[in-house]
Image (cartoon, rainbow, N blue to C red; front, side):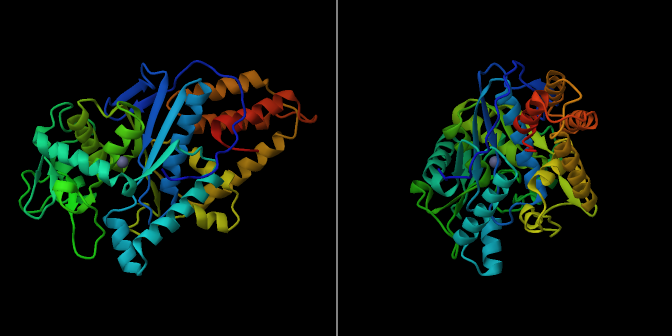
Length: 411
Ligand SMILES: [Zn+2]
């Protein structure tokens, strides 16, 4: 397990009993989460450390940070695991293109990511697990899939998951996408529909046999190679969180193939469903296009921090958009967030014009309703606008603590 970043202090504001209701992608609607579990088991897919941390990443991890805060506020114990895909094609390609050792690149980018998360006051996961440290476990899982007939090996040595064997849940259940959409997204998002010898173009890579110039590990009977991406998450989730997860989370670009395949792999390996709830965050764009490495239109948290932007203003930019919406970043968002932060900080020095119990109840109501952060920010705006002229009082202090505990914004 990798040591991550320092946890922010979380003020105690007293607990309430309600678990949040959130939108589940596979249920296509709202569900209470966690369902029938005293403990919330959260797995959020982590970064591939080569281009960290752009605002799209930050929006995702801040959204799940709010989920963790709302769970804790409801008195629910949380076990949160995040992986890091510390060996995969995009990382190796970037390392080759820039002439940097791939391990050095991963180390550097991971450190940057940790520093960004700490600055944004994100609560670190309980376990942060790399693909590299999990290779033996993943190879053993792939071997089990081969033995059970859920996978097959090509002459090249590459091993593929046989989607035709996915019955519980039926393949396609998580995303709800039709086959033409799946084929299109599979090709777009790292899949290899055209590899000769595959039984179905959608069959997903489980084990990539050693190639010259690429790192590889001993795979036992599989032969030397390295793990595929989807099986990495299924195996780490099972080992470090336990199945079923209360929530499998990630960006909406992970719905297919990543989470669809992960669910199929987990079910084939354990007979248990991967997750009861699938939560997906919207995509952040710039200049009319989704923020992505391939388009090169990335806004980095570290770059904003280096310009002297208050990380709390960055956090407020992210919270001002509902986690499920797709949105376009503009510089004006940052200016607006800075003004909002200033107004809140000014109010934090004055007597509260609204009783703390009322403000906190309203905050909780908005956040347990599918993490409605924009509405929660409005609750705080209303409080700030109603601040009295006297000095800060006990209500002010309680509200300031609640803003910190629930929204992660320290005033
Ligand atoms: Zn994942």
